[in-house]
Length: 306
Image (cartoon, rainbow, N blue to C red; front, side):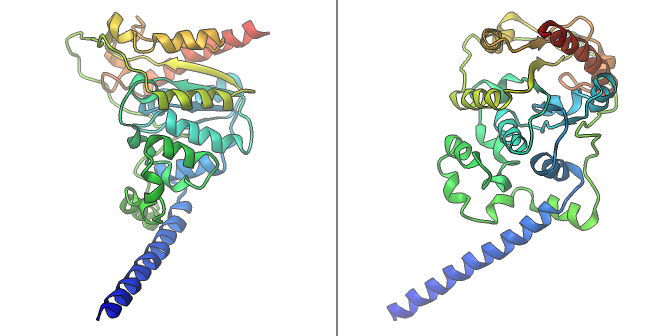
């Protein structure tokens, strides 16, 4: 009797492993052949991208940097590698995969303290990296964020469980849920006028050691490229404590002679609704205007280096 139970259990486990392997690889094939929408962007960035100017960061990077303006002004091809709700961990993984193929000429990083510098839930940044787990350096990143991930990643299906339904829809229909222009996703509309508001910071700012580890690794990968950090405009005003969140990092960049252009409280943009879709994200008009202003500063940086 016990032998039968053990045998049935073993057969069941073998079937589960086989099903996971077959289903996981079927999803992997499907995902790898998507060339539109967010997954299409991800596939291009991690496997094909060879553009001269790259933009990294969170949703503010995605919506604030119009890639065509870089091409028109600098004569260089450009691609926006930002991702909603993600920061330095995804940026490092994507740049690591890109630099296996080539070294971009200019790298721009849009800094958001919660995603790039301060203590927060790092596991949320792993969603776009799971299907690239076998690429060089990615397994170490997962280990640093959550040591239990290495056991979960033994499941082929787990790598895609958060995006399967969306990916299946895009694969079967060919319809993208977002449209980008060389990675840039323009946002239309203007925010409603509101009472002026000041974002107030906290007295204690706790730097995340994991984020800083991969920020340093990102900077190392960017050697040979013109690296520029930027804090793009927001509609709100920030008080001195809120601005303190990035001050140590700005000083860190200064010591390494890495340009950091901070548009916080910039009079051209702060409290000007016509440039924003909401308080923290610029619309297409704002993105174009801001990108032009940034390019002027980048040209100045390049002239100073000559």
